[in-house]
Amino acid sequence: MKKHIIEIEYSEVDSINNLSNEDAYLVAKAREVANNAWAPYSNFLVGAAVELENGKVIIGNNQENAAYPSGLCAERVALFAANAGYPNSAVKTIAISAFNKKGHVQEPVKPCGSCRQAILEAETRFEKPIKLLLDGANSIYIMEGIASLLPLSFGKRDL
Ligand code: THU
Image 1 (tube, rainbow, N blue to C red):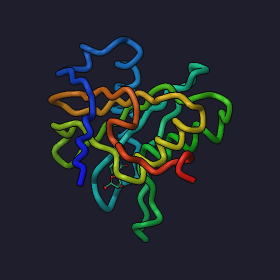
Image 2 (cartoon, rainbow, N blue to C red):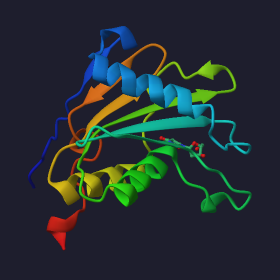
Image 3 (cartoon, rainbow, N blue to C red):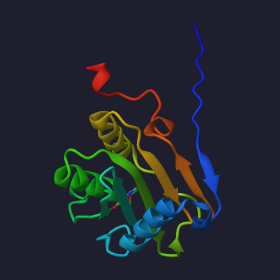
Image 4 (cartoon, rainbow, N blue to C red):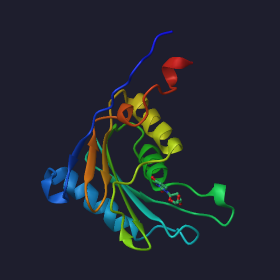
């Protein structure tokens, strides 16, 4: 039997002020648009801001539904809107921010499994890694691609 160990890599800053201007803008946007989430069932408001290679910034927030599985996470709302509106522009970066009843979450918000898979698809589609900015009040994680969140992924190459 062989044992394999996979390492993942990410950086961390303790404040939005320690990000580049471009990344800080995107995180600020994700924070702002979380306010417009439709999350009356979970009261967990998530905002996402996607920066495309053409310079456009597309936003999303979670959209819940009384029939719970019919809702969608902020990341996929933003990514699908970006790919729908600009099918030829690669996704450069996605910033994600979340607020619960107590306010801005302390630890960086982590995308769910389905969103990780959707981010992988957006990377594969344009053959370019997507930078992830996972925002929290205490720290912000920076990842250079979805492989940091979804190692051993299933994708196009496996078909
Ligand atoms: N949610 C997101 O929108 N993104 C995440 O990264 C985590 C979870 C949403 C789904 C649901 O509306 C609520 O947060 C609680 O799970």
